[in-house]
Length: 364
Image (cartoon, rainbow, N blue to C red; front, side, top):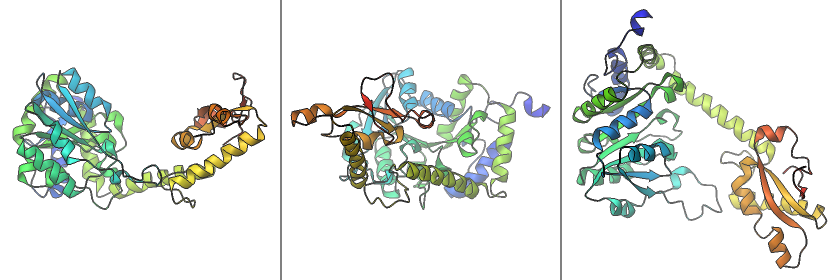
């Protein structure tokens, strides 16, 4: 341990870089040069910061796809860059039907419209929860190549994608790959975010600038954490970690959805027979109507579990007290209180709530 605790090379420990090269070379279908095409950073956040500081000058523009991790925006503004955003568009039936993140689309005409003479970088990221298809990434990558734009692909959640494939910008041809820097996270990958080890992979003409930017920002990443990360990558296949970790999180997802089912709340992976969001809203609306009726004309403060926020807001349309009064009806919902699970468990669902002058609804 003593030798691992000594000051390490500023560009990262050789063992970790070799382990990463061995992991990603088959994925990228090329031999990655561990010394020239990988930069070790103090967490993925420092990796993003190093990339942006290496290439963005004051006034340069960075395109980001919304919804986004707000840290990107903070970093660009910190280095006096300019943020340009393009928003994913939901499917037409999003208000009525359960949809997947993959159903949301990026309008290429809108992306073209935000490209200007000062555009230097585009940020793509897995925080979108959408896994872009190969045609989508090819369209984005080709546009960036045409305008000489560097692509920052933040793929920290790459191993938690539950799609059949996980297309990557860096695998879509030499032209796109030569302008792509991929960010990864040891912490996200191995459920050890406290280690603060990240990395950037890309063409050596890009990575050498990232390496020097990180030297100025953090100088080195702690040696023991790098050594542990190297062992993790070396053993991941042997220990069947990739598949086992996916199953671990799949079980957690199932446990969460079972709990939401028990609460009677809709969810994407619900085992209950709710074919569409419209049905879920109608079911919740029926319960709210029963509460209003049982209140015998008293105005109701609606108490919902926090997970029902969006559906609750949709369900109370025209059930609010002001709208009911307009229609000559008494009572109605005067407000909604959303309680998190821990508070809910303490029994606050049983009204009336002492700090309101309205009758609180029973548990919904």
